[in-house]
Image 1 (tube, helix red, strand yellow):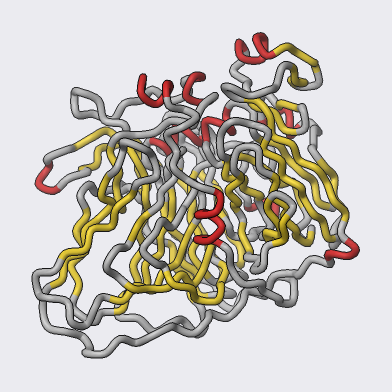
Image 2 (cartoon, rainbow, N blue to C red):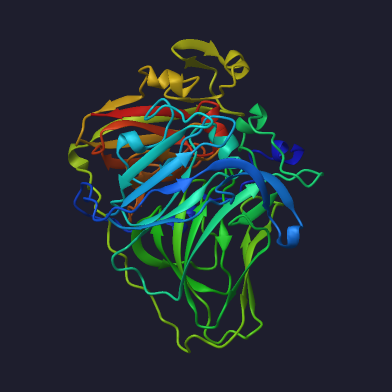
Length: 486
């Protein structure tokens, strides 16, 4: 990891202008509230356990991993918009676990955060989850107990909530992007929780996978139209796939529809926790042996190919289909911006940061003592040593139910942070004080070093909700807090 340490400030090639150009979306306006469940399906049984998976074909790289029902990623949970999703978790791990439904606006008791919304599920125990899926789109599930260690060992899976009127495609595919750290013994390393990494860019692996596979090859036909649902399930890695030679459109961010815009030939950034839905068109005149490499150049000197699209067979159609129609908006409450209350959220700490002291569980401590306790990031000058402390009553804010709020997220650190808010979906209003021409809905927003981002939402979901960085080493070492609604 010497290279990563020495280049912590400079190895990320994201530019703020590039990011804005690639991610700004259209404003959405829809009535608020949760849709009533239209149907109930029997519970899906999920059993997290330790096991072995193969990252390469023909057993070329078998590694120890944690899986749901023997696979990583876990099975796709697919329901129609408005239906209930029911899951029965059987914990076959040797430690406590939960499941968080990332991006799904669940009731508070279903959010899957230990000591905040439920007791942790002990080894050998079971727990039931059931909630209505009000919003169509691409979401995912993962543990929220020992998140970095459990997710980093392979515990994650996709959730697809089907639209009533989806975009017509030939195939609808999910790609869960992740990385693994493989040692010289060709086994997955278990060096989670290193404070040096947690105080820098996070724990980056050296092997990138798509749906748990290395060197992915997707075979397509000329003229085929694909819906590609990209989910970043990595604990720290930022992906930026480039689709050179292919045409297509981004149609949703974090499950929320946007006015379709071209993917272009540049980077399309996907931070940990983010999802991007693409409509990808294979050229109708592509030769039968054509190959398109989907490449990633996010980190300097660490270029790699995410996957290869290989063309074969007869053409599906001979003419391009053109720009797809916009998906129908989800039933999100539109913030009342003139009447919204603004709250400042300041993130500090980490390597090369300016934080010198912070309050750990209410006790002001110098940075050296904080680091000895494994705490190096703070939110509004506060660090909570564990979620148990939060359960005992510590909250960053207490919000009024039904009221509109603007959170002014200020990143006063040397590293970017994908900030995730549980239980709500928000609009991204501005960056560095400049209003965005197109304000998209998100549940995880990427905030650059020394950048201020304003988000707005209606606090319409009662309960206790986490606000944290989705670089999971950052969350584990202090960049995590809770808000209370109602």
